[in-house]
Amino acid sequence: MAHNKKIPKTNVGRILDQKKIAYELHQIPFHDKHMDAVTVAHDLNVPPDEIYKTLVTKGDKTGIVVACIPGNEALDLKQLAKASHNKKIEMLPMKDLEATTGYIRGGCSPIGMKRLFPTFIADQAMSQDSILISAGKRGFQVGINPYDLAKAVNASFVSISNKDAHHSRI
Image (cartoon, rainbow, N blue to C red; front, side, top):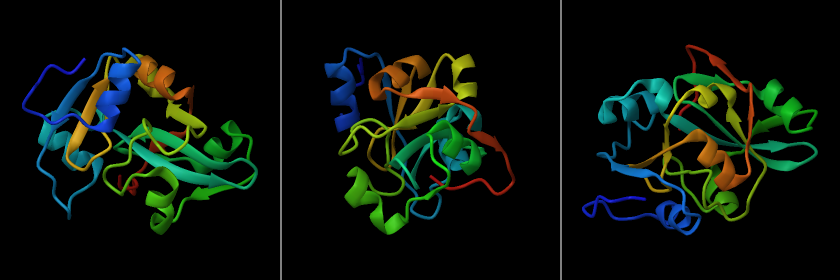
């Protein structure tokens, strides 16, 4: 549970408390121009592969699908489509993000969305003790065990990301 009283708790923290899942809340300065995961990693002084970005997509058969991948990697849409039983999947238009999830760009967490959507976590998270994901508000991150995250959002671990010089922003 979060023990740092100086950092205001987000809805994500409250949800994790309700589920009795351990986490660590972090707050960093929010830069509107630098919302990429590599900048967040630098601000938190952690390797970029510990920061996981939450990407929201739309499948042709299942509708909304959520992906959590390392911040320094790119989402493999074909692999995500296969894992989620879609023929085709595409990124959700940014203009639809808040209405669909309840979150805004730079503060989108897989925990606490308006609905529990099918969620997939990049399988490399299984080898990490802890990963950092958005705490549901810009400038806030939650450190959480990947298996606890999977439990919290009923997610599966799959191969859905790859190293790419043109990685997507959070």
